[in-house]
Length: 287
Length: 328
Image 1 (cartoon, rainbow over the protein chains, first blue to last red):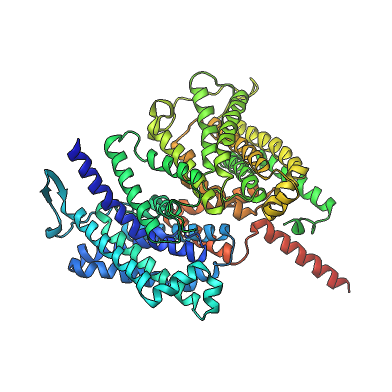
Image 2 (tube, helix red, strand yellow):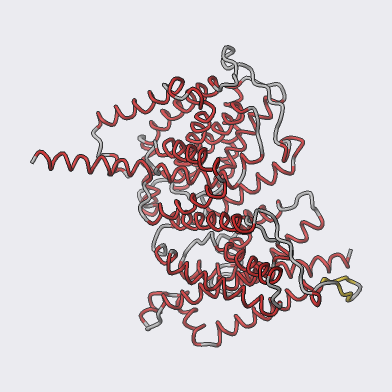
């Protein structure tokens, strides 16, 4: 019982880390621009496919594949921001929902066209596969790697946000865009860069998550609820909020699927509705 | 939208409205080979009409409206599978089931702002979809509900394989419900809903019970959605879990946007355009259909969002201007 509990906790935390990486960009879009981006999962999917192609077909080394997934998704995010998103910031939420659902449909169709509707198989590199035993629990090395990458990136993000000049302007822009603009911060540019970084992180998360989340063209629709949930529960004003929410969500989801498989995804949706009703402003709110 | 409506003179409007329903009634002779498709169009149109109450009049962005459609469909389906094959009472019970669910869930939905509402409605939809999958004893699970036996409508009309009864039945139900809805949106209740959509803060200050109105509208919409779902179940004599799927919720939103929101006929017109396009395009290639549907949605948002009806009204306005100019 104890050992299975530790295993579930470990897997859940790794899963939660992935959710956090993919969702953190969404929280920026929502917090900074009050923009509902239902197409965010598509960037995660893009990263996943970059990973599969580069690793399976071109045989590139894993240490190159992950940055590539980040760069390609970030570039796609930048391009779409220029072409589509920036025209929608001042529009109603309904318009944003419609346009980003449309974008999601296009992404799904494109992925189906090029890669077929099936799950993509992926072999992780040898040095990351297998199990190790610690404290009498069999731990999956790859999930440990996910945790390590997640922690490293979270620390890096926190430092970038709290210790750098750019981070300070991001925080200022989130808090009071108009005042920030008045102080000479170019909010539009700040947003473009953070949006691209957010898309890149989603792509990285998607690439890391091919093993855990799976990858097929329906990825953006399947997981959008999870990503939105992370942001809605965690709030948009801090990094900590989405992080805690993602980890909590990951552990609960894995535990639910492990201990009561017959209820399965039920738990997560029920939790979402309850949490949103009880705390519509999120778990961690700054004000 | 109300400005758009006033462009047509009342007489013209009356004629257009009567013409619309006469064409649908003439469907028996106009498209006898496609009656099955057209009953589906009517059902989708009725569903979109119900969604119009939520989105177009009450201004709640929902991505889980299929929940009530599905409850209606399963209520009618399960009833007829266990020997209650009489269609009209099945329809009423389905409306009751969906209405009660709508009423209970509305308390969760009307709280919060756009994003919270969007997620709560999505969550409710997914929850019920999951539930239908997990209860195969009742719903048939992934295989769908098989073995529905419908009694003849009013004891006279059997559900035939050409879909004549199905079409007449769907048309009659849709027409009656449309008249009720038409009455409703022009009533003080409907007007107060439109006020809520445009400026909830002011309505609150004016002393309107904002939450009560929204709960009423949401429940009303759920009843309509349940009836649409029951119609689909009864006319096709089959219910699959897709009646509760996210795709159906997204589709109904697209249909309403295609037709035009808050204009009463938007849902029906949108359903006709959407279903006919889907019928032909996804026959060619389902992937293309999805791609172009997505592109179309983006285009609609970028280049004007009042749908087919709005475009027609703009055309007729331009025509009127042209006539005035010609006279001078």
